[in-house]
Image 1 (cartoon, one colour):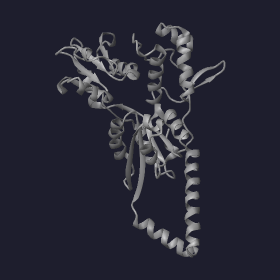
Image 2: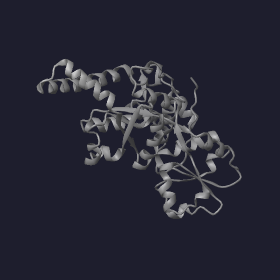
Image 3: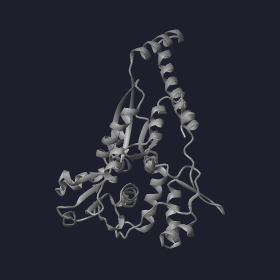
Image 4: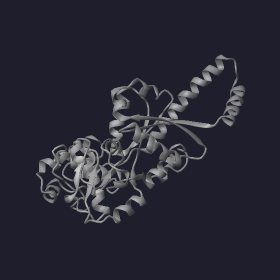
Length: 332
């Protein structure tokens, strides 16, 4: 275990230091740079590394523990929490299948069919029907859900015909009627791994039985290449959501020669005047800030998107999600 973490803190009146720590450690965990069982630096050590007080680090660790991302073992330290139990999730799905089949059989008997007749009709229907699977994609915005819908679709088994219910997490939490109605036939909810506890809590609040699948993303190779080729002598602006500033800065620091301390940082809380940075600036931005750049008339030629694709682990997980009898033991 390293006694340091690759995190970057900035002076930001909108995002407290402890939340910057939470966002970046969460990103390291969900991006599998910190794997299950990895020990985090001791509170005092991380506080010394970052020149912050120990209470700030302790609060960040407690927040991550409430989210289920880390566990604290008294006298031993803080560790990345293990993933969910695949066997128990498959067991729930099998229990729900038995429940559904029981209702089908009761109805068939009530209609006068015997076991042979029921079996014949069921086999015929299975042969004649496509494997249609409705899936919910829950993201911070509907636009983000639509974007990831296309990435998810490409990774599903070829015999699956998906339909997507794209929702904003805020609408799910608020109990928006149309959002809840979309769960009538939907069992799986796909969201970012970091948002699984929040989505799961919202589903439970509204008594929706859904298995929440956490996905992780990585920068595309094209984006990494663009970052590697940036000229550090030229002016750049980082544009991202306030909650993501630390994570975005870490990515820029890892994949470019830019000095994060010299970047102008803009968020959804910045004024239109701040977006008028100058005609020579290039705006490095995350997808969620596209409407903000459009509203501030930032020319497309001056934009560099931090574009993500799904991680290799997520690819494997999605491919096996709808085939629980095959390969689930191979998922890390």
